[in-house]
Image 1: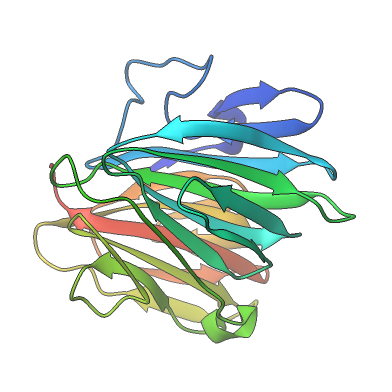
Image 2: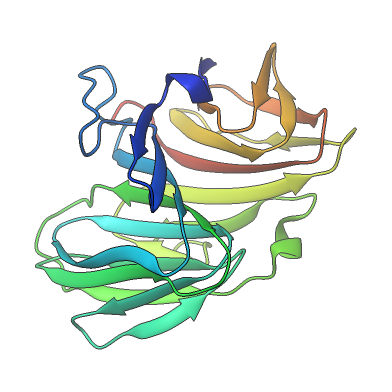
Length: 231
């Protein structure tokens, strides 16, 4: 296991937005942190009330937004418009091109993870969707959020990648069965957990290529992206 401590991440501070960049993004550039397999971006963002990202374009990227706290309002050029809350997830396949905005129209700060996964081909038709599982649905077990189309995840994407999330109570353990020739990039959203011989703290990222038990030292919340090794 390789651990990337929260303090080692790229930082973005714009007053209305505070970001931790796990990979090169915006003004943070690290040639050693360009991607992990097809995972191109993992940003841990906090957006202040009455602010957000104005309308802007994307293309040829699978974009998953995981809401941790607060409310996220989405609008796009296909006519989609909705607000989602804690534990909810939105999916946007940018494909041949789409414009969208993301804002916090609530009264408290919005914290989210924005995940970009490179698709297996270019030129897909753009699409948008969301799911609204209760936060408790990931208590004590892995909630399978994303999978390739036709898989068991609640959302399908154009790539051989899976996203899972779990909340583990202090003193409990939860294994993740990692298949042959598979690997993981994960983030500890909150809490403190022991994984193999490493201890992870809130905000840490990690690479994993073997099966481990996650043993919670405090109540914790984990998200992992599982994929084929070395693609």
